[in-house]
Length: 155
Image (tube, rainbow, N blue to C red):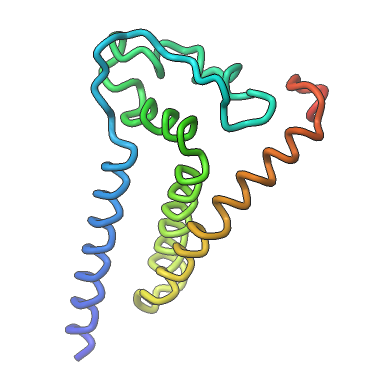
């Protein structure tokens, strides 16, 4: 009886991991570009435009598809475009995946008493509905309150 339950839990886990991987690959997978010109977005997700000054924005390793196939991190360019075009959705999905993986790892390696699917789904939904979108608004508000982007200003 316990063996059947363990096999059932492993099958459920495998199905969930496979489904999340497919959704993440679909949402943030590399997209083919016809030219190597990088378009600049006029209204970035952050209030002060900090992402335009970040190393990933200026490094050809991450942005120029002709230099490195798919960038150094596969899907990084597509993820940055999703952050620029639909920031709340991208942050909600990122938070959902983070909560899912965090709770999955906690259940597998710390709790070790089987997989609690209800808890896993509940935390993933919490990350998607509350944590991702509220973080977007909170950090935009916080950025508007801090003048400057250098280390001295933010420290």
